[in-house]
Image (tube, rainbow, N blue to C red; front, side, top):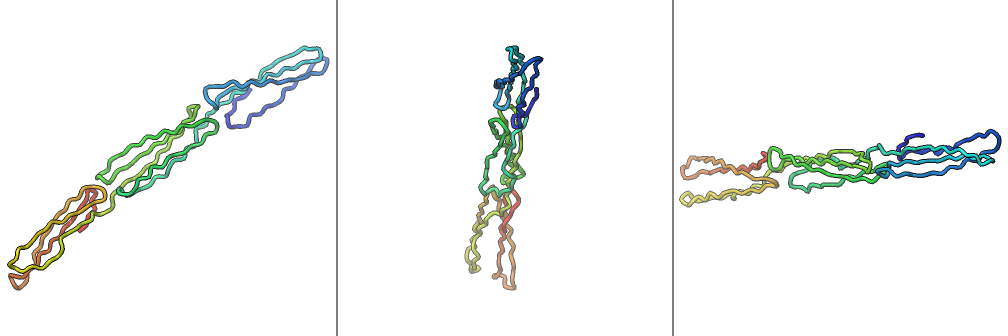
Length: 212
């Protein structure tokens, strides 16, 4: 008797017999008994030796076939992506030496320090019919490295007695919210009625990226 992995070679050796007086004929009958999964079963080989006088002896060989090998799991590679780009969620694949496979996926999103920064953890588990399993994890790092797009009022020249128009700036961001700050500096000249006002706008998103 022997035990063998379902994917390994199974030697089916012949039996031998001897008799006290005459010739012996050995016959073998095989019976496969299913187990609880495709890779688990038992082979019974019944050998019967019969001599010329009809005397016979029967012996059973038991071959226990089992699947103890976990599936080979192939998952997508880790990668880093900009928060505004497409996040590709590829599937995993698996092969097994004997049995059918089921792949399960658990995804966990872990927030980062800002709206555009977070991590997606994808844990794949491949399990065959015999209960053997393999597990692997893909990590997708999502980040915001793109500065906001800032739109400010155009430069203009105005007569000193005309109204000065202080329009606001606007900004958009690829992922999160934007805060706009303003710093104004007046640059004087020798003539009190002639001066310039420099208005510096700075747009900053949640992740600290800024345009000025």
